[in-house]
Amino acid sequence: MPPLVATVVFTVLIIGLLWLDSDRASRTSPALWLPVAWMFIGASRMASQWLGIEPLDAIENTLEGSPFDRVILTGLLVAGLIVLVMRAERVGALIRENRLLVAFFCYCTVSLLWSDFPFVAFKRLMKGIGNLTMVLVILSDPRPAAAMKRFLARLGFLLMPLSVLLIKYYPASGRVYNRWTWEAYFTGVSTDKNGLGGICMIVGLASLWRIIDESRRNGPALKGSLLAHGVVLAMVVWLLGKADSSTAVACFLLGAMLIVMTTRLVGRQPARVHTLVATIAMVVLLGAVFPNGYAYVVEALGRNTTLTGRTEIWDDLFRMDVNPLVGTGFESFWLGDRADYLANKYYFHPNQAHNGYIEMYVNLGWIGVGFLVLLMASGYRRIVDAYRHNIGLSTLRLALFMSAAVFNITEATFKVMHPVWIVFLLAIAEQPALEDAGEDRAAI
Image 1 (cartoon, rainbow, N blue to C red):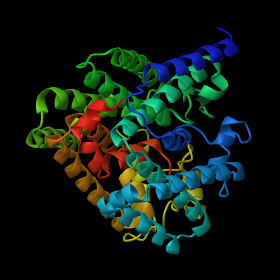
Image 2 (image 1 turned 90 degrees about the vertical axis):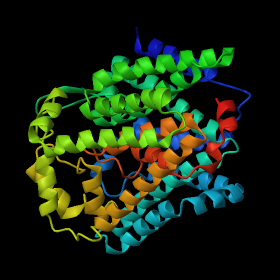
Image 3 (image 1 turned 180 degrees about the vertical axis):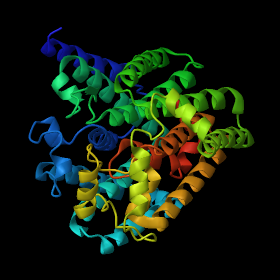
């Protein structure tokens, strides 16, 4: 099929998926397109890269970034803030319920004071604040349950078909090549294979949950939604095979297992959730404690016991001169001499720790790690408590939460505009309006 014809076909497919999943009885604000656009950029490429203004690897190799992208992101951020001002009462309640999350971003702001590159760190902090803004836009929607579902659905309907289109018909944009071996890696809309794996994990879990949740109901609208998410889930499975991201596959299977088991076995009993999660945590810890078990699992996923060089990077990071209490400042570690030293030492020029917890440590120190642990603990407690009122969304939130937590063992995604970080924030945030079972049942 010629690329132009394929583009037309996939455009029609995207429109068809959106139409099949539409539900006029569950309206959401048009402002929901703001977080969709923000997440789309974070999950794929900057606007300048999509338009060919900048090459795919240019922006990450400069400190200044693209002025064009800065205008786009600033426009989205300002529009999001205007929406929040217009919803002041609901937003105020959400902020009061999420004081710990607000305190974390306040600490990130203070950390600019000891950054070696405060201006660069400030620009990256604005993206971080943009993440929080978009999460609040979703949760402050008049129908927050419907907004959360529709947000994830729209992302899947856009990102998955476009990834398939780029890989099959625009290989120059949907693939990258190892500069030493010339081995091809499939990236789809993302800029690397692990990025593609991350968005497949998120979209796949959301679509799987929708299929299971809505298969128990009847109605023409629901049948259309089942068809749409079935198509997306099929694309996710195909793309996970192309991406060859072992971490993403393992985390998707983990999340899928949680969705199935909590839907069928847990019911409105938080104690069973604790037991299930504790069992998973014990398996992970045993794998870390017993080297033979760890090696077996890693090799079963097609990787070596160094996790493709990750363990060597981790050793180096802990040996570097970093203030253990406060780190190097928000998103400031991979800049200047430190980044040059590691780029010269490793042929693949790392620009992240490939571990979200270590990444948090080198940037924000033990205080930042402490904040992250507290956010995870409080978020988990909220998710489990919500099982007493709303099993459906709590199941999805738990799957996204656990998958993101495990994903960050080998990938650093608790940062800037990464989609896993944004979805993690959405999952752990206190969501009082989402716990109403009646609203959840009426949502798309």
